Image 1 (tube, rainbow, N blue to C red):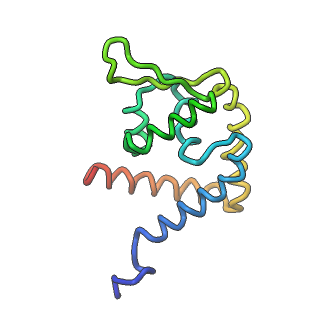
Image 2 (cartoon, helix red, strand yellow):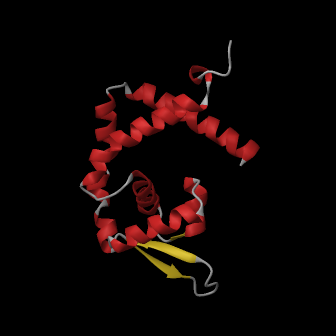
Length: 144
């Protein structure tokens, strides 16, 4: 098998799938004025409010250079606030505002809407998700 072809690259279908899924999220996120990376931050905060920038970066695999402008935009939209730590001013805590908390109920419909739009059996989606998470975790353990 010829390895140096686009079709035989492991990264290409993962990359293409990511782009296609992100594009499918775009119309679902428009009414919240969120990009997909901003949505991921909001989801994390809806699960656990008041986390550090470091925690967000570790969980979402994003560096500070990517996170800082993203968080500033969410703060400008009044979805979150940033507060310096009292014990260590280098630590910055991210918390949802009331407006940010208020989005959760309506935004919780997004995953179901995406599954409907995919028109793929949920069991198949869950199986792929499980395999992708296992694969990602192996990469992080070995190379992260």
